[in-house]
Structure formats: C-alpha cells, structure tokens
Image 1: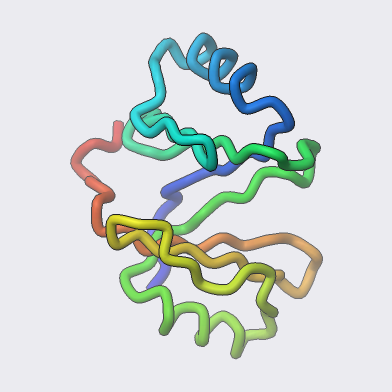
Image 2: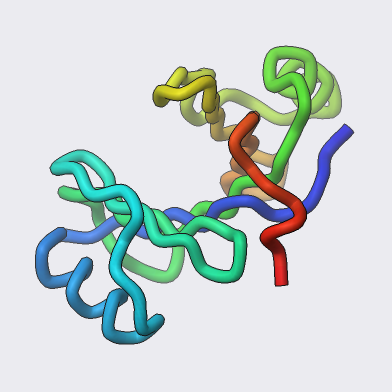
Length: 121
C-alpha cells in the first residue's frame, strides 16, 4: 500500500549555494549534511538536495512512502511502470526506488522506518 508523501528531491549544480539558499528559505539548517546529499526536515517531510544534478522543471522527484519497497515496486511494475532507478539502500534502513510511469513522469517510492507520522504538521 502506498502512503503519503515523504520526500521531495531536487538536483542542484552547486550544493553549497543551494544548501545555504534552502536554509534561508525554510529558516532552518539541514539535519543531514554530506557531500552526496543534504536533507532538511520541513514539517516532518524531507527536502533533499542532490549534487551534480540537472535542475529544471522535470528535476524534482517526489517519493511516496511504502511499507515494503520490493513488493510495491513489483506491484507498480505490473501496472505498466518501468525501472528508472532500481531499489537502493541509502543507509539506516531507508530504501528508495524510482519508476517511470506510463506517461513520462518519475514516481519515487521510499521505505523509511525513521519516518515519524506524529511529526507531520
């Protein structure tokens, strides 16, 4: 079963500049700050910045929460999606995958045992 939105990921060409800008926009520092990913907690949801990306209107990928990413990827593939990026373990029990929907969009799925629904405002 797919749950609600968990993460929106933005590719950026200049990670340091983007990190400073988003920190200013949202009035908070990132909670996760590594050269490969910067994460902000915004009202219980994740805003992620990924370096060396190609920003643009098609650059954002929203990730929808799932309990079992392997099963959900198989279910959505059966409904006509294709693999955009295979399931990846990104640490701390968090797994992500990106699928191409039949209409040319990227659908992100995330299994995140650290997600706290009580933190959502």
